[in-house]
Amino acid sequence: MNYFNIHAQEQDLPGSDEQLKPHAEFIHKNYAGSHKLKGKVALITGGDSGIGRSVALHFAKEGAQVAITCLDTEVELADAEWVKDWIEKEGGVCKIYPVDLRESQNCKDLVHHVLEDFKRINILVNNAGTQFPNEDFATLTDEQWLNTFAVNIHSIFYLSKAVLPQFSSGDVIINTASVNAYVGPKALIDYSATKGAIISFTRALSNQLISQGIRVNAVAPGPVWTPLQPATWGKVDPESMENFGSDTPLGRCGQPSELGPAYVFLASQDSSFISGQTIHPNGGMMVGG
Ligand code: NAD
Image 1 (cartoon, rainbow, N blue to C red):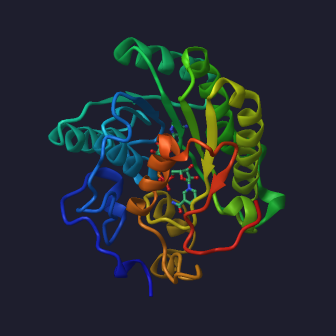
Image 2 (image 1 turned 30 degrees about the vertical axis):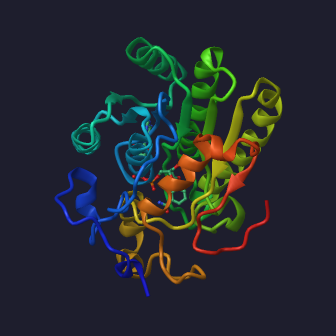
């Protein structure tokens, strides 16, 4: 069994989704929002594609106004426009912010622009991330190490710092970790290290902010059918894409549509007694922590 047993989105999709055959599903057709995020403004990094896109669509369905970031490339801008169009057709509000999140000043500027446009941010979803498989530690370059950390964890530090001064009780941060923080795949040493850092960062920041009513949690997805996978593993071993995720107990990878609801849960009052935790939409893989 593989990802083919899940219904994929039957509509034309832009840019990066061209690499996804079959196309991914970002939100179940029958997903009915119930105003869980009404009145909230969410900033979602990497909201143009994959898991971040699913989060954006679900948040909009739940009544949030969403600000999404993407890289300033033709492909990602087209992805982001698709998300914006979808949300606007649903009667929601979405704005696009092209930005490279590796730089502290870019993160500060981003938050400044979102606050200018929306007047507040209540939910920060740190989702942007990257990975570069490397089978031989001896050849893992300083540049790759620093770049993976800059995208995956430094950006979370910069953005959390930038949004917090205007956060108040009830506002939340949700970080995207990975099952690989626990598994530690041999070809993803730098990536796994950043994802472990995200889980510890989540715990410690939660401990500092919880007394203010600000919650910080993480999601640690298992294998999910997004452009990141063919763009990275597909280059190393295209055949591996056929069975991507088949080693989970469920026997398949997840669809982005199976991730968005976890973020809705952590963003909404439904999770009001949960902070500093990591939840595991990963097809049944057992992890510690
Ligand atoms: P994706 O390729 O669809 O999304 C990655 C996003 O990161 C893109 O939207 C891109 O704009 C953004 N990004 C990358 N570099 C950036 C930079 N320098 N500045 C700003 N934005 C940048 O892939 P995805 O699978 O949806 O990944 C989303 C998150 O989920 C990542 O943090 C990834 O590590 C995590 N994750 C994915 C899987 C999976 O199997 N797909 C599993 C576990 C965790």
